[in-house]
Amino acid sequence: MSEPSNRDAAGSRLRDVRRGCVTLRELTVGYRERVAVEAVSGVFAAGSLTAIVGANGAGKTTLLHAIAGLVAPRRGSIEIAGAEVSADLAYLPQSDSIDRDFPISVLEFVALGRWARIGALGRVSPELRPCAMNALRAVGLDELAGRMLGELSVGQFRRALFARVIVQDAAIVLLDEPFAGIDAATSADLLRLVQRWHDEGRTVMVALHDLEQVLAIFPETLLLARKAIAWGETATTLTPEKLVEAGLSAPPRGPGPRLRLAMPS
Image 1 (tube, helix red, strand yellow):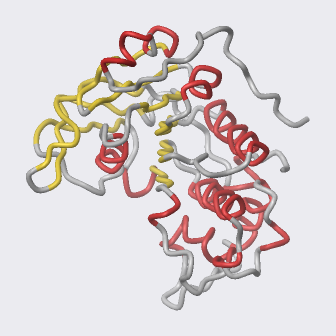
Image 2 (cartoon, helix red, strand yellow; image 1 turned 120 degrees about the vertical axis):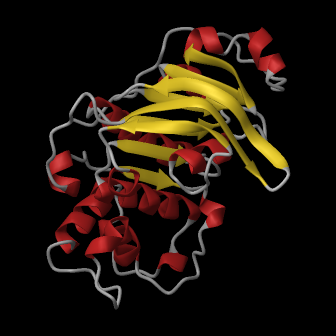
């Protein structure tokens, strides 16, 4: 997988350290009668890399939906400094929420990251095509640009989702279980992209279930069980006691030193 760059993949933009700060104030979100996230307060600092961890049903996806503007809070607020949600936020949903049988090419799917620049017939404009191709090259899918989306394997489809995020060039990146069901090599490649986005000063939030992966890669963690059990430095957040409180029965073997994946030269 080639090394992506801001200029090559999605156009060059300087990162403002104030852009992308997300503040939650007593945020409560629910669906019908069910409260999924309750009274969560805290700050995702601009340029931070945060794992959102919790058991199934803990509210991880709902929290990302609320930050992305897909569901309205019942109470409380979400404040995003220096960014407009519609233009400066990229959201990668869980793979099973996307209809892969929709008749669209891989190139067109990636270009949808900038849907406002695509014409009424869904055609990729000449100026957008190089951007989409560079994003596909960054995830190792440029030779499959003309394939139909449904022809991709699970791992290839996940790479295409990441390419679509690259095209958006957003200050805030939300990823919902992006490594679920893929092989170790693909996961490592995509983790390098996550780390590069962090290095570029983007605010990155990732819902995850792999605690060892969280301890190895992510500096900050929000431990969620509808309410925030803990939020802060990963090593002090994912203690055995707090994990049990969050309903996670398999605490990690210990934080140890943080692993940093080597970036390709």
